[in-house]
Length: 213
Image 1 (cartoon, rainbow, N blue to C red):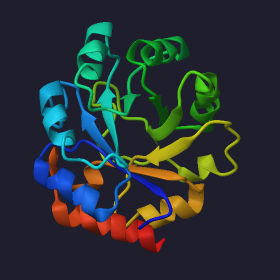
Image 2 (tube, rainbow, N blue to C red):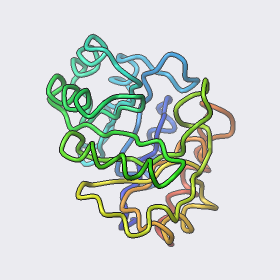
Image 3 (cartoon, rainbow, N blue to C red):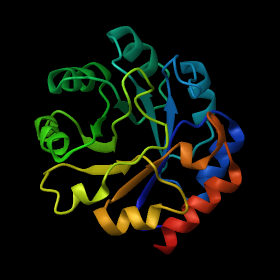
């Protein structure tokens, strides 16, 4: 079992959910964003999360969600947190937390050190900051396998829980942890055979790599 937290994101089948739990994932992510090839509906999330042990967190990933989306997801009773991955302001993040009654993670899109400095505005509004690579305009906000300059996170002076995402795989995760000291790593495309198609073997390999870092 890894000493680090591991989030397996954008799971969509019982087989991959089961593999993630067996491999030692501490958090499971489910994407509710129709433009994504990894999109799942609230009732699918409920079914996928039903057999998950209580010690494994279940996180729904949303992009600029409206109040109705938040209400429909929280109503399924299967989630332990929400993650917002759009252009949400600190005020909107705080409102999502208030409306849902759940902890809220905020994904921070990073290209330069200025993006990391801007994340400080979310301290107090978000329960966890997730640093991810900034994607090109007009593309999906995450899950594209891109990485940013991980050395930008050296000596991070943010007084909030945080994690690292973007460009992680069994081959790259130890370097990422070494450079950043990340207490949580979040992987999606790095455990896929194709967009939205998770690999049980890659899930197992990723967790094994983290435990050996």
